[in-house]
Length: 102
Image 1 (cartoon, one colour):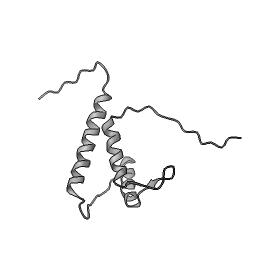
Image 2 (cartoon, one colour):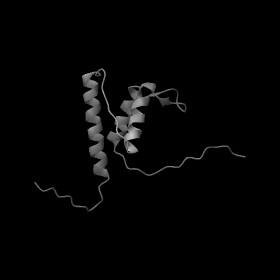
Image 3 (tube, one colour):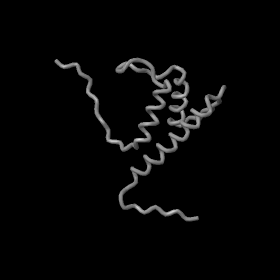
Image 4 (cartoon, one colour):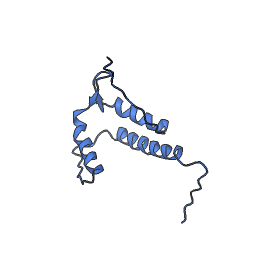
């Protein structure tokens, strides 16, 4: 009898910039532990819970107690923006014309 856990994959087109952003977040300590046994850094748990409240229709208040290193903060902001832009670009329907009126 096989006790293997079955996992399924969902096709989702993400840009390489998105992967690079996630890798950088991981490198900065978002996840802790050994491969196969990683967990979210406990200091991020309240942030994740706040996100889940927003996604489930709730409202949260976020307060930065002490700002981080400005250069790393700016790098992450830029990486997140680039990841969003590139992921949106690769997920545009082929042959779709997008017009913007000014």
